Amino acid sequence: MSEQTIKQTSPLEPSSFSRKSAAIIIIIYCIISLIPIVWMVMTSFKSANDAVSYPPLVYFDPSLEGWVNLFTQRSRQSQEYLDSLPPPETWYEELVRSRQMVIAGPSRFLGRFTNSLIIGFGSTFLSVFLGSLAAYAFSRFRIPLKDDLLFFILSTRMFPPIAVAVPIFLMYRKLGLSDTHLGMIILYTMVNLSLAVWLLKGFMDEIPREYEEAAMVDGYTRFQAFYKIVLPQAMTGIAATAIFCMIFAWNEYAFAVLLTFSEAQTAPPFIPTIIGEGGLDWPAIASGTVMFLVPVMIFTVVLRKHLLRGITFGAVRK
Image 1 (spheres, helix red, strand yellow):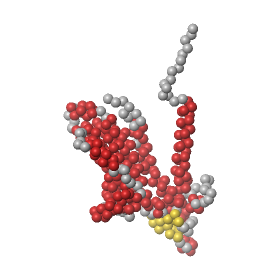
Image 2 (cartoon, rainbow, N blue to C red):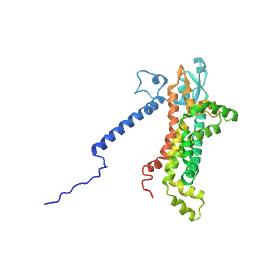
Image 3 (cartoon, rainbow, N blue to C red):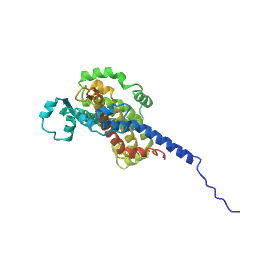
Image 4 (tube, rainbow, N blue to C red):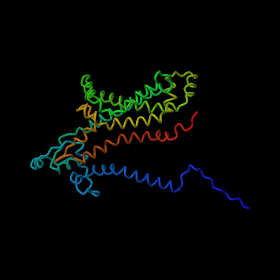
């Protein structure tokens, strides 16, 4: 009798039907998730009339009117005044004049966008830096009432931050921190710190203590072992924590409206106030939102390698 070769497969390996079904579900989910973003990008290249047309236009003549309106301030003038002006020197001046307007100066968007960069990345750095130190201490040292302290830290995330808006507003006004970059960085760091401690502690626990002990036997101090041994091993957790902290600080709206007015105002409370003729300038709002998405997207893409490592992080234990 000839031997029959029996193909053995793991019972955990998905079948061909399961893989195809999962692929279809993922593709459908991605398409549904991308529809608002694609529509927002399309709106940023529409004219003001096309943006509010009904039914909504899918095919339209692209226009950079929204982007010009985002970065400039305009004033309407009479036709006689426009005829007295010299010919426009740039394409965007010509576009503005076609609407019987002139450019009065730059808009305040770039300043608000810069404030978002300073406050968002500043608070993210402080949250990850302080969170990594606290997480290392909770992971490696015997701290009295450690579990109670960790629960207390976590409990600060159990209520919406806006619930303490009034006390914070009064405190910031007393301390002179209202409408300052430092005040917003401190506030966002306080809110994100509990999340950073809990996320990073889990990653610190996965790193064997023997690595640090071997380093200290070779002459490293505790801080040198933490900086040169533990932090590189925990880079996956640091990247994931930094992304979560950045997303919160970047998108936060309530505190930004309450505590900032001009000097430290960020982009989220400014973008909805972009006013056009007869109401909101939807192409300019869409353009500002598209530009607002770019830094977080770049930040996530840069850290994606460390996030992918997190899939198998901790799979092999000591």
